[in-house]
Image 1 (cartoon, rainbow, N blue to C red):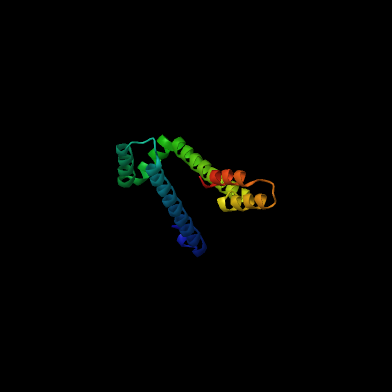
Image 2: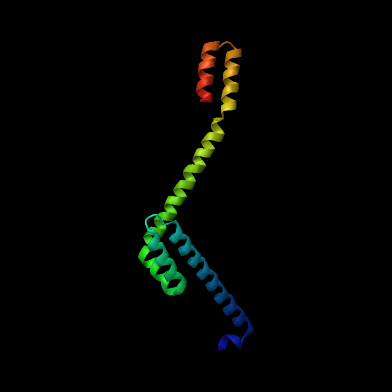
Length: 130
């Protein structure tokens, strides 16, 4: 082979083959993960796809990507949207001082300054603690 007559070409060829193997394992694990997280597949469907991917990996992965590629992308979009909503909710809670201890402290400060009376304080405190 020509690549082994020149050491640099041999090293490049080896790196290329190594890169393809890494990409192959990445795609294989993505397909297996998508099989497990698919809510639109039944248990038997998941088992059949998993056996197909394990027994005939190249053909199984190729068939899964062709048959369910759009579902794979839809699952990724749904997961990203769920992560974004969870992050937005966390930021809103953290930035708004939405903790009950903070709200009680603000309420006590309003009572001390005379803005609200004792009955309003008790009513709002009950709302916060409920």
